[in-house]
Image: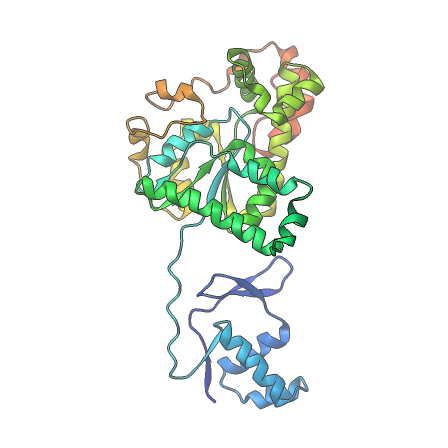
Length: 360
């Protein structure tokens, strides 16, 4: 029986040093043991497989089971057998995650202007799925209906994908990117729903400019009770800049930790870089997403109709990218800066912002 490795087998080194491979038909990753890797080496070198069996003291039946498993998983084939064509690559799910008032609506408009990308207003519903799963009786009740944990998540996955895919189809776009800042609270669920395949644009803005913008938002309209995390900070620290600084720190600690744990699927965007060097930043963003660069998005972003919904509605009055909201905090008295520096400075340094203590 002449065997060969399939040309489409893709191997990856995991963080723990173990190799895994991605089945080209399904994209599923599988950990490979040293013995199985050695067996694949025997196949690749066309060495007698009986020698492998002797080496590991297994009988011919065990060898046949191993080979059958490798063939069924798409790793090896008999000579003369055609390798199956890899499944067409589906666009990866993608999410913008950030604190509120970080420029996510601007980034949404720019992405939505790309010829391939549909970026809807805030979808919100994944937070509702979290509440559904957190309901104390959900798992027990669904289990009595014949659903185990995998089938529950599979159903929610199909539901979520169809919502986003349907929106992209309506917009005649190839893929979608969600923009819901509060989803930083539900990253574990998003990872489970999209099987650790989602990409993330991690958007951050200078903490004190974010504080100023939150202050303006809270003063300007009601409805803030919908934002539980921000409201909790206000209840804890009182309404004002100290609460908003703790909110910035809370959100961006989560984002920084998550991005470091998943460096290949997270891309950092600083608001200040986006508005001062938009072409450069967007080129890097599109490269990360696997999309072609599209210099025309900046002009189209403000001349194209975008679906209305949950967003910063001030952008509808904006005709271009503005830099007027950068470094407004520098007009503060030094005592105001010094009061918030202990809350946000250490984390701000991790995002390459200058020390606040040198400004106070």
